[in-house]
Image (cartoon, rainbow, N blue to C red):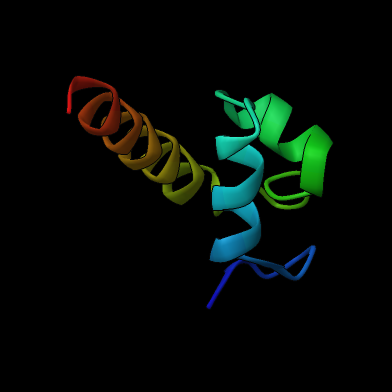
Length: 62
């Protein structure tokens, strides 16, 4: 599913760049272009950053 329509960036791509260490909207945008157009998707990008952070913490605690 596309998260960023302007730059045609899919959710899986955003999750990948977050897992690679990009932990804010600006660094995600630099890595894959998401959120650099109209900005409508920035809330969803933030949510994905939060989700991936929670997943990382869950894996680390296990």
